[in-house]
Length: 185
Image 1 (cartoon, helix red, strand yellow):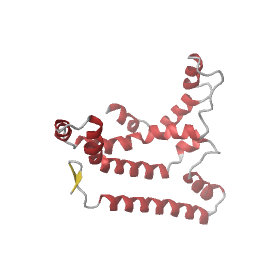
Image 2: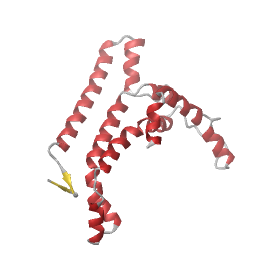
Image 3: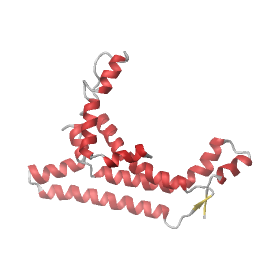
Image 4: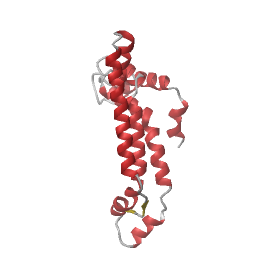
């Protein structure tokens, strides 16, 4: 749990700069791969979509793990023992008993991560470079650089509507559903 909470205690800018240091052409990752003899030339791991995905995964992973952990912690181990005593193989017991009970945590974590990722600005701007930006970059560009307030507000409205739509869909999916023993009541 300490490794999950560690990113919360570190500044977003520090984490993003650390990924720049790790992923650059003379960074730790490329140097390690060359030392192991896996590559001859440095890989382009930064200023592209790969770098953005790696850095954002590191930053957003706790927001997925914590809701998932709380829903998994609430599941009684007696359900899995009961499935095993009734002859269910471990994979079947996991897929039919355990996984359905974690769906609210998976849904909540996915929604939280997606909504947070919609507005990310610093990490894609620093790790992705100018060629790989998200919508928040363009909102900032149209408000500060070009003073195109209409387009910036339209993009902001798109973000707001996407967030509201996802929250409504999630609310409809989990409304009034209580999951017990892999069965919906």
